[in-house]
Length: 403
Ligand code: ASP
Image 1 (tube, rainbow, N blue to C red):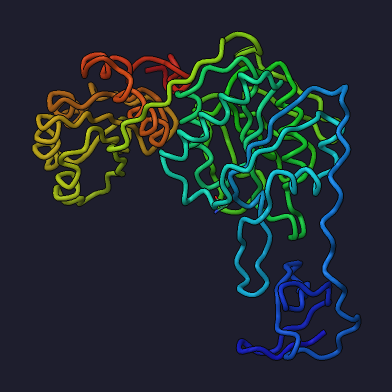
Image 2 (cartoon, rainbow, N blue to C red):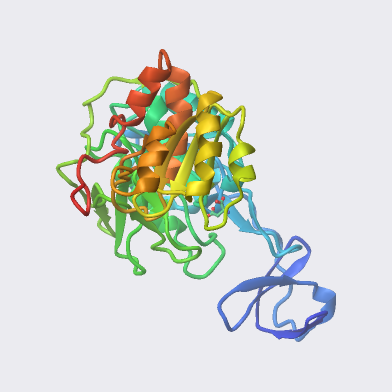
């Protein structure tokens, strides 16, 4: 079919009609919505909108999982009027759309939010932690959290600090929505269900490991990062290998010896967070006003250069911030390796100014941890000590360069 629109003539294969728009598959493989009045050579008549499918039959002999849906691309489709991807599916829809899930477990579903993850907040992390804890107390074999990929690592970290769990708590998302060719949503969800019924006993992120549909990686919630804007294998464990893998389509799960095992911890919820914390990346020429703008914050994470540095001219502002009651933790933009502020002069000066070394924590994990530690420690001495302890797999004793 051929459509004359503002940008010129668009040619493609007519697929269906949705939201008053003709859905056309372009030769690039992408589907777009175009106004039917602007199109000619419609090869098919407009079908009636599909009725909601009947719910998938659940097998009472399978273990029970909870699916808590928060939104993101895994729960999205294209809005054909605007071309934007919007979160629209609830947890039931996900189950209906991916019937394979019914082969792995039976499910309770709860739609907590329907948002893109850039709109997540620490208050929502707290709500999510409470909802997951409730499901754990109910006795489910595991919990799946469907979530946007952009800030999934922050939420997974937040839950890793706020919860102790005897069962797997698995975050899953997708890079491409269900109505796109090469969507990764069905495979990621099937891998997540397999991981959630496995012997795992910690908070993890499960996503495509390769660009093929053959394997998912299980990443520790406090060590994972989205490393690519659009590829399906965007997620990687940083500083440690993945804690497990799920083969696809067999769904067989292999856990590394380091993965915390099911039943190791008893369920606990510690959902307090000090939200008045920030994260800023140092860059050459950074104005000290940027540092001073955090005056009054309870905590600040710096993503410094190399072993954990800022320029010398920022140190006075940093010292004043610390003296004013802001706890500052240094991490590295290198992502891999540990911070060590005892090697170069600037590092030593930062330590003298009161900056705490953040080991090999990822900057975003350090931010979430700082929020948690400041709300849960008895005093600032204990908070400073906790920032350097390993609480939820976020700090490794050794890494890369042996420091
Ligand atoms: N922006 C979306 C989100 O994080 C992307 C995704 O879901 O993958 O919610």
